[in-house]
Amino acid sequence: MMQAVSKNLNALLEDTEGVSIVEFALIAPALLVMLMGLMDVSYNMYATAILEGTIQEAGRDSTIEAAATGSIDSMVEGDVKDLVSNATLTFERKAYAQFSDVMRAEDFTDVNGDGICNDNEPYEDANGNNAYDSDRGIDGIGGARDAVLYTATMTYPRAFPLAPLIGIDPNFTVSATTVLRNQPFSNLETPPATGNCV
Image (cartoon, rainbow, N blue to C red; front, side, top):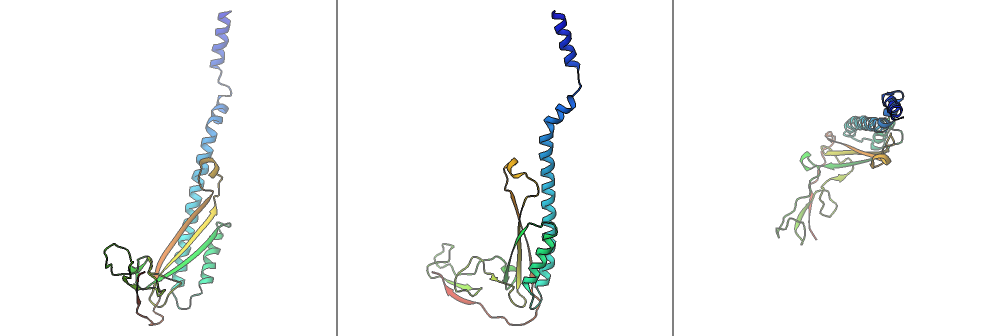
């Protein structure tokens, strides 16, 4: 009897029929998640490249006098939505007097040495809004010879259902920027005003 049980056990251990399907069932979930992750990353990289290329072209169009920013933004949106039809885009333009001013705080005299513009310290109101700002840019396309920071932000639902599987944001957000100088279409330049910090 023991010999028969041992013989049946050996026959069962040597039987390899159906092993491939069991191995595939064990490997398939990890393989599918890995493939979807690779396709999601590739799709997002391609969408980002489309946005960056389009924003570069649109930035050049924005530098001419009387540029119609609404139609330029619509062109960017149209190009991006050819690939990502459900994307939401937002646009922002900030103008600066020089390239070196981009995203730089307004200058101030730090009388009390605390590194903060306060206690009625004098500052240069570069953007003319009668307040000290940590970014001296002026909203919009600015004037002649201004350096303009043009930013487009795109948000869309991920193309592959990975978010619940690996705990990531179900939406993908990316921004593209370009900085270009406006053409010298006029020579109107006004010196910045000064003020005092509160």
